[in-house]
Amino acid sequence: MASYAELLTRTEWKARREQILELDGYKCVRCNNREDLHVHHIRYERGRMPWEHKDHDLVTLCEQCHTVWHNRKNGGYLDVEEFFRTLDIDHRARLRHE
Image (cartoon, rainbow, N blue to C red; front, side, top):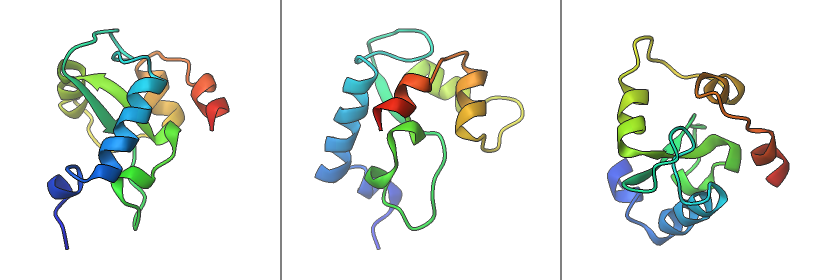
């Protein structure tokens, strides 16, 4: 079985990543930075490939905000609503997009 890092090199992930970047206007949803963009999985669902997650489970963050997110004090996973509330982002448009 492929490692997670290997899965992120597949064309399916590259296409899905591009969709999320486009959805978020090619900028970090937290700070509006347009450089060094990552697509962050808010949560993972067992048995799904990285590219099989819904729009509201994926979000564009710049490298700095992504690092800050993963190094936050409390750690652990948040549900989608709590994730966006923590970043002070209105995610209703993203949910309507699906």
